[in-house]
Image (cartoon, rainbow, N blue to C red):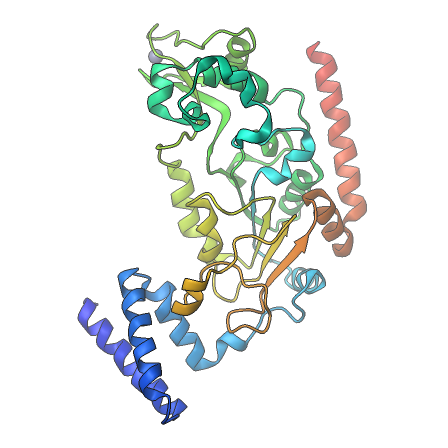
Length: 369
Ligand SMILES: [Zn+2]
């Protein structure tokens, strides 16, 4: 459809809406506001996912219709129990790994950065910038030595995600974490999207030869900068996404197909500030409930998108026009996940799974030594 006829159609829609409202006194003001709203929405090219969608649903009264009987954790539990083939997407950030002892390395206050003093970095984030890395990979590998997934155990949250998979409810898990703990927890790689890459594999920056974590780990823990054995020249960089690098293709491809078909979105331990990961929450259907398990409310709709009537961000106010489907459970992720499992009647199963997995990790450690 060409842009003009789309605009005309919107105009018709608006006239129709205004007539329905039939408030004579405020018509002028309303239409001015509407005009600005429409203009901005068009400029931001939100199309059907934004303004258009809202108009459709508002006319049919769907925006008041909620899929949750109760906007609470209990409401979510009931929703999962009633939907035998519930397709759940989980999204996670650093918060699911902090109880494993993994430091939040992107934060300059994490204490890791004092080790980098001697390198005179232009700014702390430079170690994750590709240009800087090409010139001087040493600071990155110094930090990597501290961060290498060595001896870290997955958390209750990781095993909760695995349990969702075992029950056939997990459509996909999207993680911002590069610590590979989802893999250690036994989540199969086809269910996993590592949005910011992973330490699990690496590549030579010169000839693209692939390398395993085991190989890289050996070099890094010895304090050697991993050099490619194929071309003898390139530095081997773990496949984590640096600033200025594009996200893995897998992320884009799967996000496009997954989010539209999800029945429930669970977001855990992410501050929802890093894009494009953060805006994934807006890609589910407008009727799809979203549960946030985090120590504080994040990713909320801002004033501009509220003004524009855009469905962007989480709306925890059940009474708002776009509310009624977003639930925030505040606290640490492990407590939240265990509670959710308990309420679903899977509590003991989750505890048993963790016990079994920890025992086998311990046995692996022993056989390694
Ligand atoms: Zn090479």
